[in-house]
Image (cartoon, rainbow, N blue to C red; front, side, top):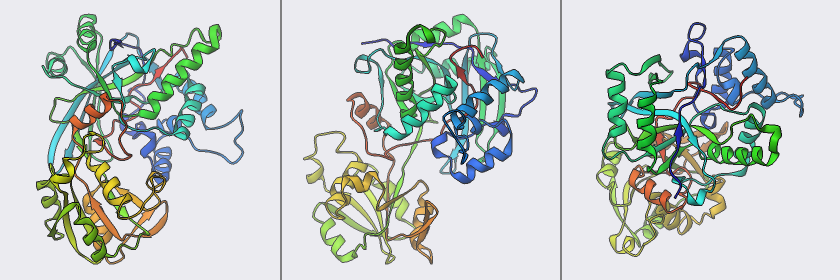
Length: 442
């Protein structure tokens, strides 16, 4: 088994004498809507959006496109000292303050380089999501143009003795970590970035991480892109010998902390014309069904979070909590198939609503909604509609979910299995624009 190797690095960071971090950072590229993309472009001519998700032009060509323009901007910002290469190798502490269900949290972690495994099969890094060819192709074109990690991959690891948690908090309290920036974003979530250059402290972290398994929380496409780019650079030979593609930029967050939150993603159903009586008759073969109401359904679902349960809301205004019968669940041995999202797909979407796997993959009948109240309002409101890719869709039913347990994520990832899409939402996402790992000297 290959050891986990992390390394300090000298990233490019926005020059705080010229730039305010809250004006130039952005969410991960894959959660940015067209409206937010436009807003971030307008916010600052130096916003990271111009690198990670540049705009396409009608006259784009192989010689002039959003990938080429990202590389040109990266070099231009370096020349103008908008971005400055850090003078010393360091690791970076990153703390995110946020509120979930009315409670305040702060998630802590660190950013460093991660050595890519020679063979994924013999490594200690695991993913839990399926990846798609098109996003990987897009990210590879960007990486080939810029030769940079423009955003950190979000990973988690077990820190049972809390050595890394204590290291981070002690480094800040003892002022061994130098604060670079502290700011709030549009959601009023706070971001704190610190630098550690002390070699002894860095060596301590490297040693502690060696035997740890790493689980990708967010950024599966970017991680596989890094592997593909590394292989491409190696195959190209001496022409690329100055490009260090053996490492990728990664954010590591200990699982063992209060700020490690996974939120559910709820399912809104369209275009299925669900007849309530027939549906309940079918569902009762494998599930217990309890009536609820708009005021109590979220609490009722939470009370049954260990029972493979779902909140079900029909367009007729009926509310239910449905739970898989123990006699049925006890027949399921595969840990992947025991997940709530798998049970919903296999027993309800496929068996009762007659969806094909391709229907689920292509979201033919499903709209995903992260906010339970929005999901409830989408079907209980006067219009029973929601916006789906700029098209108003009539919501016929809603399935409210409980969050996937983090121990299920690590178990399934360790078995090299892949969860259904939208199984996890590690909240909050890590922000882009804090550090940039350029694989050569600009």
